[in-house]
Image (cartoon, rainbow, N blue to C red; front, side, top):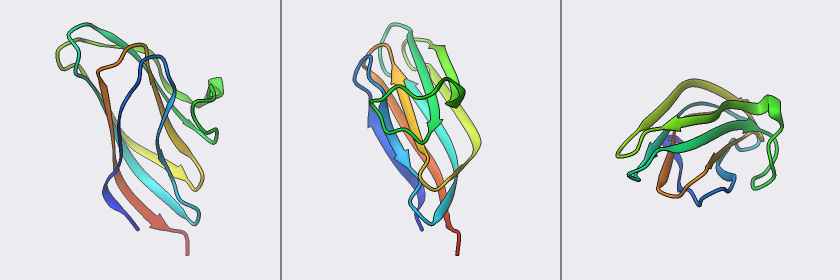
Length: 110
C-alpha cells in the first residue's frame, strides 16, 4: 500500500502521458495537481481511463478537456477522485513546461 506521492511527470508537448496506474488488488483515493511552469497559457486534458497512454482515451473518460492554465504558475487541482484497479490517470498538454503530480492512498481490496 502506497501513500503520499503516487506519480509525477513533466509532460512532453502534445502527448498523452500516463502519470499513475492503480495496482491490481487495490483501489485508490487521489488528488491531481497540474502546474504550468511556462510563461504562456497552456491547454490541458485529464482522463481517468483503462487505456494506456499514448493511445487517445475514450471521450467519456475525460474529467478536464482543453482547460486553460495561465502562464507563470497557473495551477489546476482535482480532488476526491476514486479509481479501481487497472485504471490510469492520463494527462495531455498542448505545450511543454507542464508538471503533474498525483497524491493519494492505495487501499487493498482484501
